[in-house]
Structures are given as C-alpha cells and as structure tokens.
Length: 137
Image 1: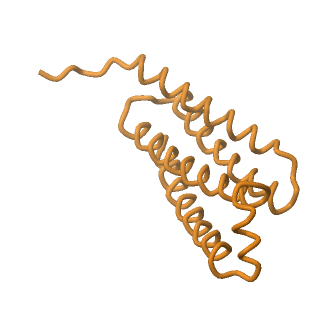
Image 2: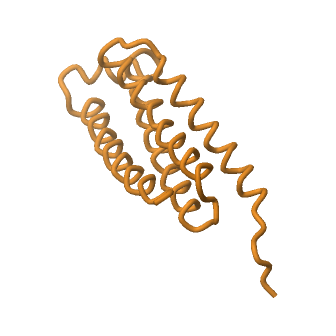
Image 3: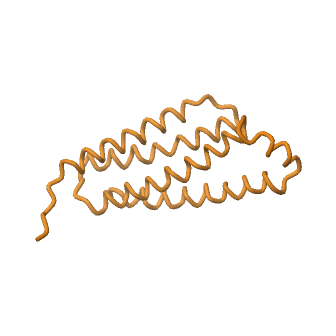
C-alpha cells in the first residue's frame, strides 16, 4: 500500500491545480478588472496565487514520484509509511498559500507543508542510499 495512495492523490491534486491554472488564465485574460490583475503581476494576491499554482503542481508530481519509488523499491514498513505520510502532508504548503490568499489564514500550513515535504525527500533519499539492490551483470 505504501506509495499507491500518494500516486492517486498526487494525480488528483495535479488535476486540481491544472484547473486552477485555467482560473488564473481567466483572471489574466477575460475577467472584469483584468488590467489591474496584470498590473499586479509580481505583487500581492496575484503573486501568491501563482506560487500556489506552481507549488501545487510540483508537490503533486513529487507525490507521484515518491509513490512510484515506494511501490518499486523495497522501502517497507513504518519507514515507508512515514515517508508517504510526510509527502502527503507536504501538499499542505500550496493549500496554505491559497488559504492565505482567499481567507487570510496565517502561513502555518505553508511552513508545515514545506517542512514535511523536505523531510520526506531527505528520508526517502537516505532510505534509497541504504538499499542493497541486486547488482545486474
């Protein structure tokens, strides 16, 4: 089970943030007030919204990758479950950015999600480093 859930959730998360990308295109090109949206390209809610879009897609793809590696490599037991859980918790980062933009929520989810994803990547890297894979002739 380790990894399979990360792949599925990562793909769903990716689809959601791809749709959100179309929302951003709408806001830039078609929405009333689009001129102001374009003028605020590098500041405020526009910038934060683009950060959420980019990190949402990145963290979704990282979950797909981490899930695939957990399925294919012998990283089992509690270690594999923790790596998978931390990777999933990492997706709190882009959700936290959106929560800041839409609801004014403090950035705690951004920090928790970022730290979780970094922890997952470091732990998976160490687990893979320690693996003794069969050598091929």
